Length: 489
Image (cartoon, rainbow, N blue to C red; front, top):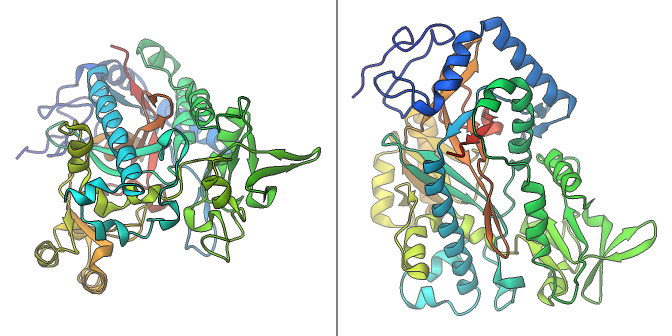
């Protein structure tokens, strides 16, 4: 076990509050030496006064305010809309590290897409005993309406945000897959624009791979899904509306791609064809990048009380007259219990060992694993299989007895709905907080586009647990983000 070393051992101000522990530190080795790819940034930070860093942080914050870059926290009575917290210091990833991530994510998305096609068609993976049939059929996101539906190019998942963590041994592991309506890419792009202005000299001295083409790549991916008889497809982005937590992102991406941003009331289905209402009359729609969950996408097929979706959309989709990204029913591969089987899924469909490992996961619907979980609630992280954003979660070491008892009752009442994982020591990176550079825990959400080819933007959204000691990086739980630099060499 490492002995904590204060920043007096590893540098001068602004590192006077910097402490190393057993977690992997992105900037420093366990002995307090600066990692080579962080050297330029480290040297520049030591040249800057605290006042200069504060001024740059204020500039960055003002840029976010002026652009209206916000998110919404649900469940609060007032003041739910907040400016997205931004950390001034970039997270740097070497070219070699990124190569492993890129290959691992390509492998993972390929296998998951084959898995989704299989379970909605022949179900070979059930027949061969790789994954229990009941696990899929009891998943809230399984859609019987999608059985034997031929989706465009057999692509179920076109836009993916996969959460990665770095373990103490420096390797990357997948924490969870986000395949329904993954968010955050607008913050990745905006972080880069702000960073170029906050640290222009440092950015210029690093060979950072660009991410500016994401909008173009996303549009190309969406075009590839269009029905074959529609050579010049009309593409729209379907948003739940202004009160959605990611509405800023919806407007940002629609503007970036040059496509229409629509709500359910702007679309109409007639004879299984989708049309958009315009001032010039109805215009046919060929591809919908939807940011509306399955439950609300079509009130005739799913929740009848939904006013967010488009009546008749499911039938138009099943008829092959419109493409959806992502496909209805992809949430199965989002399920945290199904996550535990992804290594087996990769081996089954691709005949390969996973390049990126999973985190050890206990399934509470298995009696032996449930017993272990209930005996070790204070040591584990408990997650509801269908929740996101840091909700429905218990972090055992930071929990109270009352909270643990509440989760014990929840698990016993519905064991299928919960999984457990070890409390992991996420890697830490330098952050400018409280007028000092201090380490904070981070993860990484790269964005994968799956069309004619798999495209992964070189970077992603590095999310930061801004509260000292916290392991929760979600913005809804007090987290923020920082720019992610992938080096060319």
